[in-house]
Image (tube, rainbow, N blue to C red; front, side):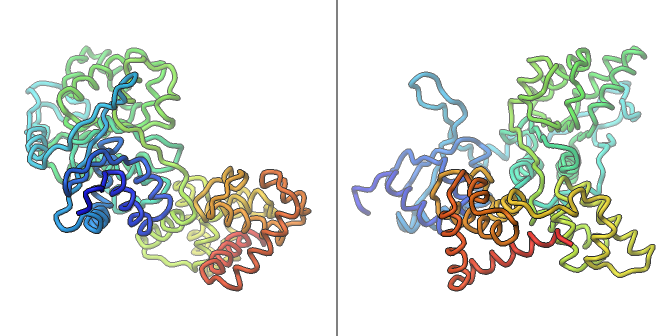
Length: 479
């Protein structure tokens, strides 16, 4: 082995191998933040920013890492992790920990899964007094699971973190796990999926799902009936607590106080907490600072609006589950136009099927446009430059701000040129007006972009496919 090798030089060459095998976005997300810290013989130590980062690499990229390292250091190459757990202060280095051994993890998991029993006589808010925790009704909906919670860029972090928690409740760094996002994006589905998975794998654990509203009502009833201690004891005996819509605790001072006690007891006892909210924790208002700080302890993962490909996959999954089929252009039409949340997608599909059945008509694109016009707010929208930019950027998974910026990155420049090409071809805007939508570029830039696109269509099959696919997506909304 070359004696002049350093950790940085080895890792840089590993990154070249890795870059060629994954998408640019995945490389930027999962490999650019990594730092090489030590090379000891054939053992390379890399520093990753969190426990979750380490677990994601081990689950998704361990084979690729092994391949790259073996190529650089030969047979017997080893990879070790240095996990950052604190930022340090001043000029100090970040606080780090070594990855625990599998043996230690297993012992911890076994310790946390030891069964406990409820004390006889404690009143259960779910009307199952004095029973072992194994018999508590978890209030989980069995139809929600990981199999029908489809993964996309919009939810990958939340789904992966949820799956890690489901496999090892209270054994990861994600405690609490806070899942946040807008209405209809799958928060409730995901927490039920986590709870169901835990319950199936650990039948001796007490798992409970409760909405924040129900929790508050139970607490109020306990105050009225003088059973406050029973209420507190019941919740403190749980192994896994899933609370939906914690934003409703806002301004409820007494409820916040009792939940603070329960949270502390469970967390300190090595129990798992999973919460959902309609906004990031930092945007929650009228919450006790002590409670808010605890919401920020673990991992906060958002659920965003699903992109076009994910919306198609969701529709196809719904159709498969119901044993129905629809033409591809109809599926694409619905996915293009219902772009707010999953719940509206499901409603659009049900509406289309109902109209088809009642009118005894086969489902085609004309029927879809006719029947969904009340659901689709922009069904008759004129093609605009902004709309073209949105679809092109969505297709290439970049932001509109990127194509308007001055960056000369190849993938950004290409997306910008394609968007300019469609703007000239499909709108009545002048070259000057088109240029103004792309960071105030002049008309000659637009002309050059259109010529470049035409040339690449003739010579590059992959480029031609992208342009054809985008053309179909842009035009599918017009009548």
